Image 1 (cartoon, rainbow, N blue to C red):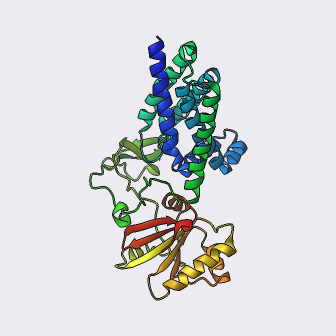
Image 2: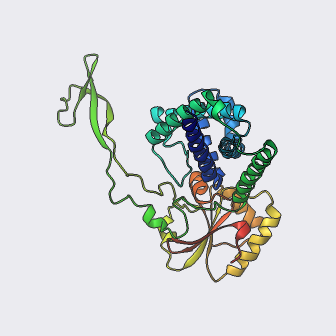
Image 3: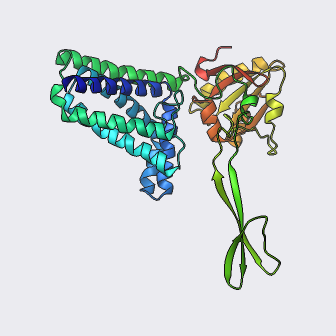
Length: 369
C-alpha cells in the first residue's frame, strides 16, 4: 500500500506541476477561460452580481490558481505540510471535477483549458482525467500516514517559497511581454488568410427542417417534401441538428477588419504583397503620453516605407489618441475584441507581416525594429 500511495503522490504531483507551468506561460489564457465560466453562470442567474465581480478580477484568480497548482504539486513531491496539502489537493480536485463535468454536460463551454492552449483536450478527456485524479487524491488523503517528507522542514519551506516566487515571476514576465510558447493561430509563421478558410477535411453539421402549420386551432409539423395546402396557416420553421459535424470551424473564425464605413477590408489588407505592420491595441495603454511618444517615433520612421495599421475594438478612442499626439498611421481598423485577445496577449502587440504571413510578433516593450 505504501508503494501505491507514493506512486499516486508522484503522479498527481507531477501532473499538477505540469498543468500549472503550461498555464503559467499564458496566464491571460486561463483568465479568459475563467471569464467564460463566470459569464455562463451569470447568464444562468447564479449569483449574477458576484459573477460579474469575479469576471473583472479573472486575471488575479488565474495567477493565484496557477501558482497554487504548482505549489501543491511540488509540496506533494516533497511531503511538505502533508496533511494540509492533502486536504487542499482533494478539495481542488473536487472543484476541478465540478468544472469539467459542467463543461461536458452543459455544453455551454467548449473546453475547460486544463492544460492551456498548447495541449487541448476534449471535455470527455478532461472529465476522465479529473475523475482519476480525484480518486488518487482521495487515496492520498486516506493513507496520508504513508507519506514521508523527503528533506528537513526548513529546506522544504525554502523550496516552496522559491516555487511561489518563481511561478509569480514567470507569470509577471509573460504578462508584460508575450507567452514563452505561442500555441494560438496567430503565432509567428502562420498564414492568417489560410487559417480563415474552412479546413479541407471539414464535415458540416446536418440539420433536419420541419415546418409548423396551424389549422382549426391545432398545430402540426410537416417535412419540406410534404407541405400542406393553402388552407393551413404557416407558424414557424424548426431546425433540428441530426448529426454534428467535425472540424468545421476555421482556426481563425472571428477576425475581420472593418474600415470607418464598416466595409470588410480583411482580404485586401492581408493580401498585400509587401511588408507592413499590424499594431493590435485592445485598449489604450494607461501611460498614454509616454507610450504615444514611442509610437510616434516609430511611425514617423515608417512614413513612405512600410505601412502601419492599428487594429482595435475602440476605434473612436484610438482616433482621438492619434490625433492628440499627432501619430501618423496608414489606417485604423476595427475587429472583435475577442479576436484581439487571442491575437495579442499583451496590449499593445505588434505584428510584422509579409502578405498574410506573420513574420514577427512582439510585445511593444520588446519591439526594437
